[in-house]
Image (cartoon, rainbow, N blue to C red; front, side, top):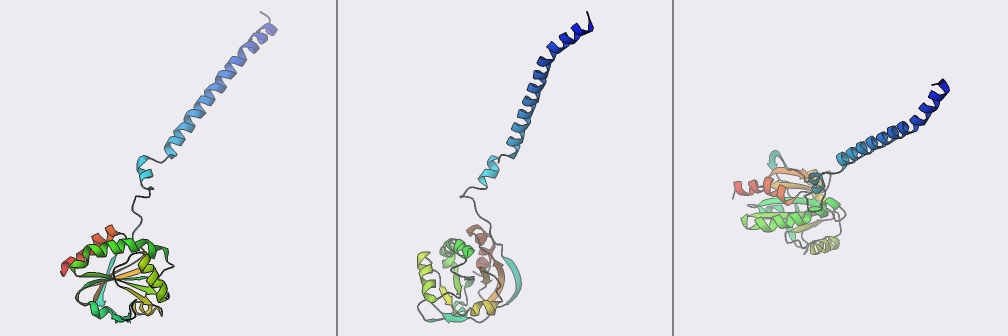
Length: 204
């Protein structure tokens, strides 16, 4: 067979080989792409962490060097004088907040639920508003159905007395009027049960 005939024969065979090679490459690419997508797609566990029903992040109370709570005297929503000393003998969760503060709003239902669950044990929440007009504070308390004491503090006296730098900031004051723990940021009901309930039980 002449060399020209061999070349013609090889030329006729090359297209099928090329097509097979291209097909194999496409199949391999498809497999690799499917593998990548399956690895990057959220797993059922990770998807469940993003559902609205899952708990959000929570501030964690930290113990502080025990010290007497600052004297605090303000006026309640009814205009009558109120003071921290009026609650001596109770465990007080003193919560400092503002109507414009998103995390303050987010934690209010949890604070209310925890208060309702433990008020019979000598526990109370006192929500001290930082700087809003009393009328706005009262409207907020009504909107959120708050049943614990809510005190307007239009001159932000509490922020200065407690050295507060951010909102919401809360303190646990024991039955003897001593500050025991604090945290900054929104807190959940589960975290309150875990970290605050022991303060109620230890002196109950």
